[in-house]
Image (cartoon, rainbow, N blue to C red; front, top):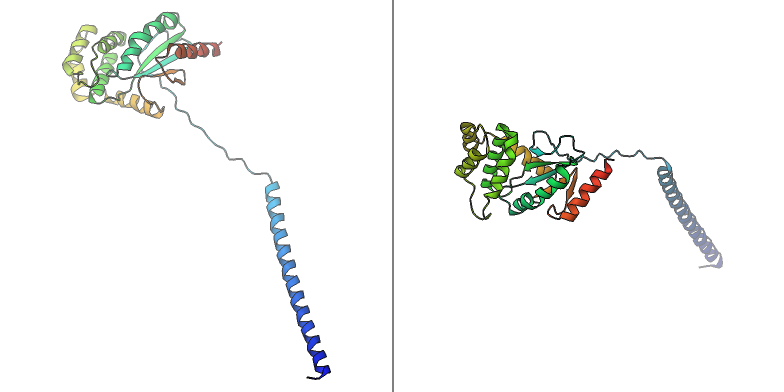
Length: 242
């Protein structure tokens, strides 16, 4: 190959390399421009005000309507116990805690105490709840006498001690002008089951972990048998009403 041909070859190679460099540079510039455009759009979108999403938090409330209670209906604080007649801790609450509450808070008009069935220990619990609902329907004032007598009759929770005969006997002894036929219908046909189901559904919706479950207003107490914790919660609730 002559010197002239070598010179032409070098010139062509240089031109080819130049075109490659130019083409590569153009591609790099385009890529950089595209990246910068994407970054700009992203920053612009972030800078624009975003619409706030409205979040709604629902909270289950205790329905006091139609529930047995002691104390003044105008008491500034309501205390509620979800309870099962077969539950030994519920009996302990009834016999150890309620008398103290009655003396210090209920009889002085500071709180009212509501009882709501929460049937967690099987068919016997459901039967007892139906009986208590019927008694309350017949004679609200006599309910608490029946209520105490039924807890007093409680036996070991492993025993099926709740019977129709026992419930009828207690009701006849504690309820004036007792309607035996209506009471037997409640036991045999579960005519008060709708009320029992409503109470159980409310307990479930409140996330109650077990019985007794004690509420001071809307606040569930971790241990309703803890005198100090319960008293502190009641006193705080009373202070909040002033």
